[in-house]
Image (tube, rainbow, N blue to C red; front, side, top):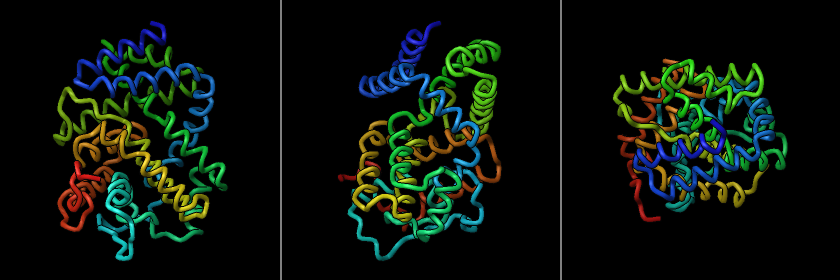
Length: 303
């Protein structure tokens, strides 16, 4: 099967699942762009694949920065926040990670110091300048990990695990390392499906969408880069507000957004029972606490 046929077949699956023509068109544009830029994408994937555990720390949801996390899920709110409702709604789309790390849930600033943010950005994202910050954020907007996620999901629908692996070798991997990474994520996806079905978080026929995995990182990375002094307030907020329309088109509730983020995280990082429980606890607090932005602001809030 050539790449274009693979795209067409997958888009038909999305249509059968009930996605709108607008959503399908967005996927098609992203996937074709990814295929056309395969050489550049593979180079980026190789770099990110080698450092995946590191990348997924403060601004992407791994437990590499455990020292920065709070003890249990607690709401951190800045009483001096001056954000508008629209700005707070956009910030709240990154709340799954923010609550895990003890960051403010209602402000642009994370609440961490400039030096802490600079150290973490340098260590985990190799960001030490405005230019590098803009490059990383634009990559998340343009491609991120959602294209490969969709290919792995398509591989999951193959008749056998052998065919799944062959599909990934054809459409993702260009060398042994990339093949191992792709197959590991295929196994992660299988394990995540079992876990999320067991906890009644997704239905048997549901494919959690990957968009929020990339866009939540845009939100939290923009906040960290603002605190680090790499982005101005206006630049950081522009990135964050840019996430609203795609997120609202893809999801229908705070819970669906949260489950999709956590599922994608499990595919990318593997299943960590302790972190999974922490994130489940965080989601419950965000969905029920009267002071939570997810409770104070409805999903379809007029913005």
